[in-house]
Image (cartoon, rainbow, N blue to C red; front, top):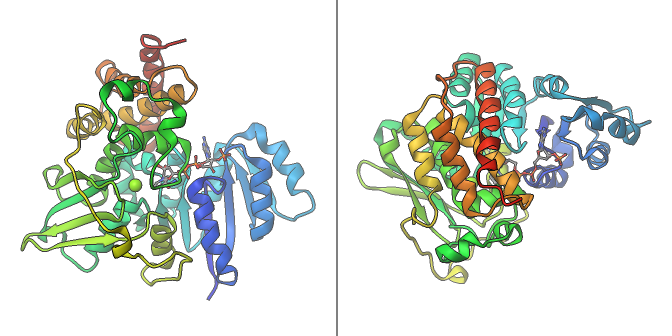
Length: 387
Ligand code: NDP
Ligand code: MG
């Protein structure tokens, strides 16, 4: 049976992993929509390869390039925020939400409001919108399949169980490339060092988030929304081998863990085939080869991001959207060489101190908080900018 799929963020790292799986089983899928921000030529090539019905660039100024690259293909080119939402709202069996950042929120919500099944990689959307997205999922009868590896692991460990029986959920964290560095070394980390993740190959933004541990902070908030066991039942443990992707402990003290190679094709395949299973090209997990699995408490002195994120979700209201917006601005500034590594979390904390707003209750209000918090983060940047 042929299934239909739309992929938001097709030119990214999660996009490439998803298309790799689709490519291996080409006859099983019909591709409806593919999107990018401005990688128009690359997007057009993917749209032609997969016979997509529509290809969309989020940045409307790149539509001319897309149109030219799709000329004669019969594939519909489209551009801009409204076109992205329109494409995301088209009926398909599964929408993979793999845009990076809060830029993915409106199109993801468009898929939610259609009542679709969404494989959610775009954690920033859920961190920013929180209750707004979760209540829309319930209201529209949508299904969220967690694609982030930790949340996919938890989802698998919870299968068939009662959430009231959960005593604790443990998110594992690799610790990132700077895990063993001293405070002085961390302060001098360059963008090249920060994106050099030891286990996972990912886009630049999430790679920096892994280095600061903000990725785990965002994932803590993401887990809180996806698996409502209460913040006091969520914890983080550093596990440098990235073999156990997360764990669920039940009240009888039985702990279930999901293990696998650190490759996003595993959780993506679990979403694409859900509630069934499908093949992936990955080698079997050889634990004798891995040898050792080790675990450590997170060090919030060297990596304060998980504390900042926990405080933001405890505060609730506009704080998580503010945290996410400020982090996006700070990571961008770090990658552009404007601030040092340690200043990423300093800018986030400074923004959370400077900006407050009432709890957003609609998508428009979340987007307004995001926009204002970005402005405030830019002002905070100026006080610590290197250039
Ligand atoms: P990438 O940076 O590799 O790709 C991002 C994708 O989003 C690209 O297709 C990009 O298009 C598109 N995009 C970027 N900005 C916009 C915008 N403003 N409007 C519309 N589209 C945009 O990111 P990743 O694939 O690494 O991550 C995607 C999401 O998945 C993130 O939320 C990340 O946290 C999450 N995730 C990623 C994992 C990974 O292993 N990479 C693991 C777990 C979660 P273009 O090419 O034109 O810029
Ligand atoms: Mg993850």
